[in-house]
Amino acid sequence: MRMRLLAAGNRMPHWVDAGFDDYATRLRGDYRLELTEIPLGDRGSGDVRRAVEAEGKRMLAAAGDRPYLVVLQVGGKALSPEQLARWL
Picture (tube, rainbow, N blue to C red):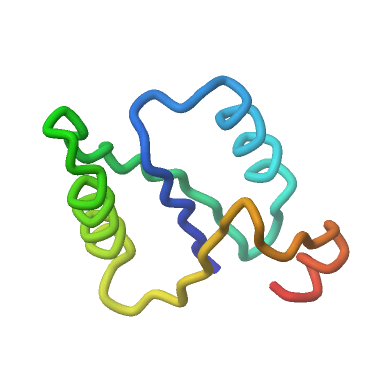
């Protein structure tokens, strides 16, 4: 199973890269994890809503034509490693 983590931002912080590398090396067998960085939208004009909308469009385009999307958010449901393994 190919899994792609789409992250909005340029040059991810070290902790993001370290966490990604840790999970990518833990996955074995048929699982493959990839990180795709999506450039941030232009916030210089002050229109944050438009910038976020542009990022979302780029994320959907990067997801491909037949994705199964799982959206991660700060206030979302936390899964233990065991729960994640069962879900996968």
